[in-house]
Amino acid sequence: MFSGSARSKTGAFAVSQSLDPPLLAARDLALTVRGEPLLRNVDLDIHAARRLMILGANGAGKSLLLRCLHGLTRRTGGGVYWRGRPMDRAARRAQAMVFQRPVMLRRSVLSNLLFALGAAGVRKSERRARAQEALEQARLEHLARRPARLLSGGEQQRLALARALACRPEILFLDEPTASLDPAATLAVEQLISAAHSDGVAIVMVTHEAGQARRLGDDIVFLHRGAVAEAGRAAHCLSAPSSAPLQAWLEGRLYLEETRLSAEKR
Image 1 (spheres, helix red, strand yellow):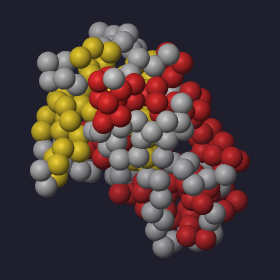
Image 2 (cartoon, helix red, strand yellow):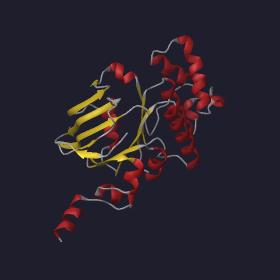
Image 3 (cartoon, one colour):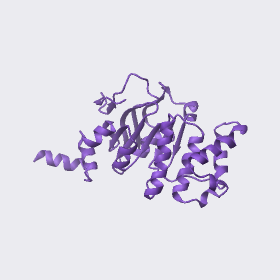
Image 4 (cartoon, helix red, strand yellow):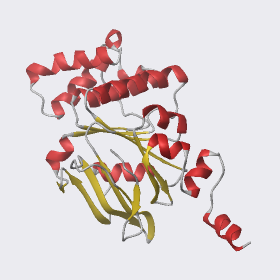
C-alpha cells in the first residue's frame, strides 16, 4: 500500500509502499526521442491486486509510460523489473494490455477469444470452456457467432477485455478503455475491470477522468511533462493534492511551467 511520495536522488518521485516486493517496478525509467525527453526518471512500484491510475494532461506521457512498462516501447534509460528481475518474455506472458481502440480480428467474437487463448499457449482442450466463461462474464455470449468488427464500440471494448482476461494475467494494462464510450457502455467496462480486480488481477490504467480514478483507483501517479509530479493513495491525492500540476488539472485549469515561474517572480 502507498504510504506517501518521496523525491529520489534523480529528482523523480518514488512511491514508498509496504515491504511486500512489488509485482512490477520501474526505476529511473526514461524515454528520449530525437533528443526530446518524453519520460524522465520515472520510479514506481505496482503491487499485486492493486489498482493504479495513471493521470495527467494531454501529452504528459501517460500512454508512453504504459507501453514502456509492458515492453511495447523500448525505453532509453532505467529499468523495468518483474518480481525483482529484469523483464523477460515469461514475465510478459503474465501480463495483458487493452488499448483505447481495440483491434478486432476478422472473425467471430468466439473465434477472437479462441485465437487469443491459442496464442497464449492454452491447451486446445481447455480453450472453448475458457472462452465461453469469458463471454459470459462480459455478457457477450449471445453475440458469440457475430463478426467481431460488427459489434458496437462498447461491445468491442468488452470483448477486448474478455480476450485479455481469458488468458488469466496477473497484471492488466488499460489505456483509456472508456474514452469514447457512453455512460452505459462505460459502466459495463468498469464492472469488468472491478470483477478482474476482485479476482486478484493488478490493474494499471490510464484515464483522463478524475471521477473514474476515484471510482476505480487505489493509488494514482500523476505525470507532468514526462515526470512524476505526484503519487500516492487516490483518495488522498485527489482530495488534497500537494503538487501544482495535479491541483490545476483537478480544477480544470491549464498548467504551464512558464505561468508558474512568472507568478513566482511577482
